[in-house]
Length: 273
Image (cartoon, rainbow, N blue to C red; front, side, top):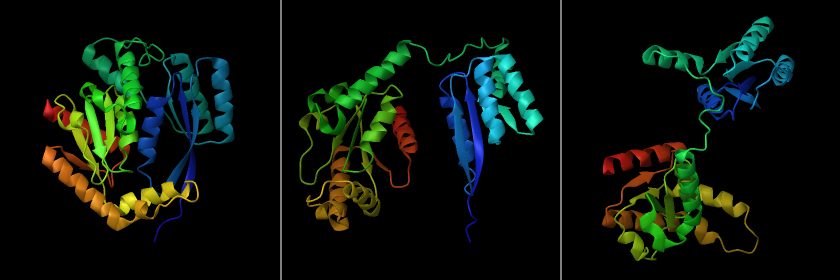
C-alpha cells in the first residue's frame, strides 16, 4: 500500500543563479518518494537587506535550508538565524571547498558567480546552441559534417531536447528524423566526423508520448496512424535496421531521462575517440 505523499518546504539561497544549489536539492529530494519538496528559490542574494527578506520568508514557511554563499558574514547570519528557529541548514559548497583547500594547500578565492564567466567555454556553448537550433529536425543536412553528434530516430524519441541538453554542454548536435521508407540524406550516411546515434523506445512509450501531443493538436487532423502501435512498431523496426546497416549505435530512451540519455551519448563519444 502506497503511503500518502507529504510535503515540506525547501529553501535554496544562492548569491548567483542557484543552478548548482537547485540540482543538489532536487537530487536529494528525489530519494524520498513519499515526500515532495515545495521549493523556494532565492537567487542573487548578496546583501544583508536581501537576506533579511529571505529569512522572513523562511520564518513564515519553515523547512530545510540549503545555501551557496561566498560571503562568510551572510553565511554566518543564515546559520545563526536557522539555529534560533530550530531549522536544519547546510552550506552545500563548504565541504567541497574544504577538500579542495586541503588538497591544493590554498584557500578558495571566493568569487561570487565564478562559474558564470564570459570565457571561451561560455562562447563555445553559445555557438553549440546556435548550431543545434539551426540543425533541428533535419534542417540544413548539407552541414552535417560540422556536427559533433547527430541523433536520429522516429518521431517522439526525445531527439530535440537531448540535442539541446548536449549543446548546453558545448557539443554541436544535429538531429534528423527517421521516416518509414524514406532514405536518410546522403550527407549523413557519408559523414565521417560526427558520432551518429540512433534513439529508440518501446512502441508503447512512443504511442503514449504521441497521444499526449495529439491532444494538443488542431482538430480535423488524421492522427490515427500516428498513434497506432502497429505502425509505430514498423517505424521502430525500420529505424533499427537503418542503424544496424550503417553501424550506428542505438540507445533505448524508454526509461531514461534526457540527462541519462545525454550521459550515455557522451560515454559513447569517449569510446569512439
